[in-house]
Image (cartoon, rainbow, N blue to C red; front, side, top):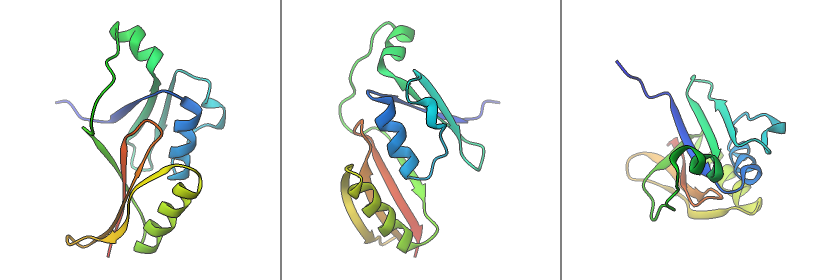
Length: 127
């Protein structure tokens, strides 16, 4: 039986992408910015990988730039206040907010930011 255990993101600028995900609490080696492939493991054992576009082109033979939002990553925060703080921290660091924090009808504090490659990233906590 197969098991999903890695999400891979294709990035234009590895250093910028890794800096963004470090802001969200991911533990990523500091000296990884020059690598074409970088992996980090979450505390729950799930792996996230970042690959340069050039690496993906070398593997697949070509790369077609995606259009639109096909996938969203979500980061669970410890509290509703942490959602607000993390949103502000990301925006103050120069990254783009997509939707400011709000209390969603499904019982969570929610916000959405955009990573350097245009991926939507949700921040949430139970109310």
